[in-house]
Image 1 (tube, rainbow, N blue to C red):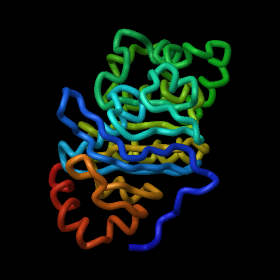
Image 2: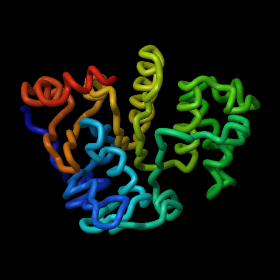
Image 3: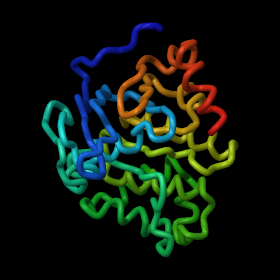
Length: 249
C-alpha cells in the first residue's frame, strides 16, 4: 500500500481503543482506532455487523464507550451528550428516520439550527447553495420527497450548525445507482467547503473512489487502513471484502 497521511498538527478528531456495545457484557467494538485531519474525507467500510455504524454512534455519544477515548482538537469528549457535541462542532446524519416528514424542508432546516436561530438565514443560504433544490422547494413537506432528496435535507439540517466534522451513516443506502452517485457528489462538495467528513458506506468501491483515507472494520476491529486508492487496489482487501461488499451494494 502507498503511505497514508499521518495525524499531525491538523488533527481534528481522534478515537483510540474504542470498546462499546449495546447490551451489558457484549461488545460490538473491540478496540477500534480512528482519526481525521482537518478537511479530510474519511470512509469506513466493512461487512455487515462489523461495527461501522456503532463506531459513528460512539463518536457522537449515542452508544456508551466502555473503554478508550474520543477527542476533538485534543479535548476529551468521550461519552458527551449529543447536544453538547453539536455545540462543539460535530454533526451526525443517521441512516434511517433522518427527516421530520410532516415538516417542510425549511422547517427541517430550522430544527437543525435550533441552537443558533440567529444564524438561520446565513446558514440557510449556505445549505441551499450546496443543495439548490432545497431552496426552490422550501415549503414542500419532507415526507413527499424522494429518498435522495430526503438525504439532502438530512445532510443540510446537520450543516445548519456549521459543524467542523460531519458524521454520515450510509448516506447512499436504499438509493438507486444514479441517486447514489448524486449523493457521493454532494458529499465531496460538502467536504470541499472545509468540512471534515467521516462516512460509513455500504457501497465500498464507490466510497473508496472519493475518500482521502479509509478504514476497513471487521468484527469490531481495524482490519486495514490506507488511502482510498490503496485500499481499492489492495489484493487482500479486494479478496476478503470488496467482492462481497460489491455484491451487497
